Image (cartoon, rainbow, N blue to C red; front, top):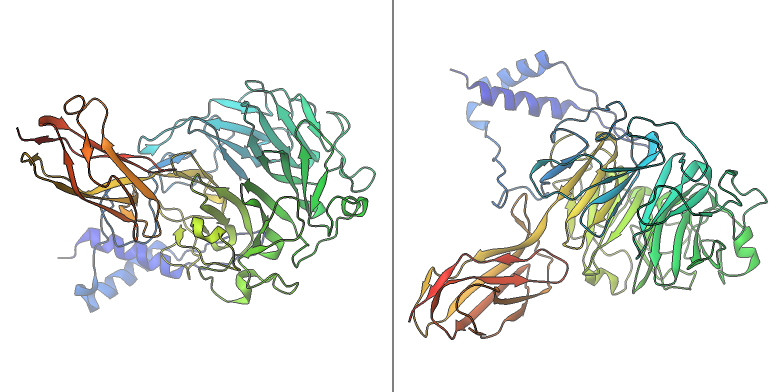
Length: 528
């Protein structure tokens, strides 16, 4: 008797095998499926020929290891589940080809809902499954309106967002050729960049200059001011804090602050050129630019318009501009139309490699210099050489944006699946101490950094983990003795020979590391 569940699984695999995938830089993923009846017949034939060849895929349980190399999200926003990709009418929990995502200071996020001409804010959630609906809207009077507008309350195809240290919001209003600033708690802009008034919207009205914009996209806030990826002017502008006049330009030659640098907007390559820069990010090491048209990400020392590092291309020469470096398939060191960059608290960073349908992670060591370092984690694919698109919990269809919160959780804007996925990352106690420890005895324990949804250990993790007695547990005044701060090796930290100087019950140890969620042991006791 034929197992119907196996038959169903076989039909799914047959359909996936038959899908045809085509990509252009701006047009991603057209899927063509053969009829279900044909796939069922094919499954029957395969099963009849070799019934032993059918194996059931593992069930993914959060926290348990799997054979997959791709992390698994635990929360989905704007869709009811992980396999739906419906384009709903404009509402409080819908998206229409959104283009950008930014984390707030509370674990929630803002998203530029591009075709709905608005920016939405979604609150934080760690509950598995469908996340909460939006609780704030910019650019529209309500959650069901979506017409483009100008003025201090309107938006026309917004494409970039940044949150300032005071809780204010910057939004790049792409087709109004401007960037707006909103005070904290207000949906009415109080400052405009790129235009002389809130009602003007022309690109480069007097030609490119220090006060003009042409399709601005990604935004970043550094210690000295605002960075804007002025995409159709093929440049990145820096505005000093409080000023709407740029004082430095990247992508239009050297020295970066001359009049000729501001009045030029030619696309270029090499170490001083840019071609459709889509995003910017800044940290203590410098400025990162997603140079999408050249299929690379560049790093600059702040105030120096000559890039010193490149990701996605073998070098900084003018001819190194091909998608995936001219290869038929991607690798861990190639990019195809990267559209956004996100930096985490550990100095690691993520790239939304949109046309390869994946998110790549580069560890802090990738910032130490060198050319074209490979990524060490991939989201959305099971290997670095695949670029398939679909609608499942572990695949994407045009992942155009990525963001990381203060605890290392990763948010992916999956554009053509009309959703946001949240991947939880945190420490995990892989080796628990015994439930009871004799007086004077020592304990060992181990900790790793995991993708919580899949149980995958991130073997690239080399950070320091600190262990201590959790406040309020065990006996007051007890001291944990031994080496309590250890660096990870291949993603794992092992503590050996730890001891506690006071007997008691209900002890819990907590492990913490910079930039990721902590983890606690199960309670244990120390004998008298």
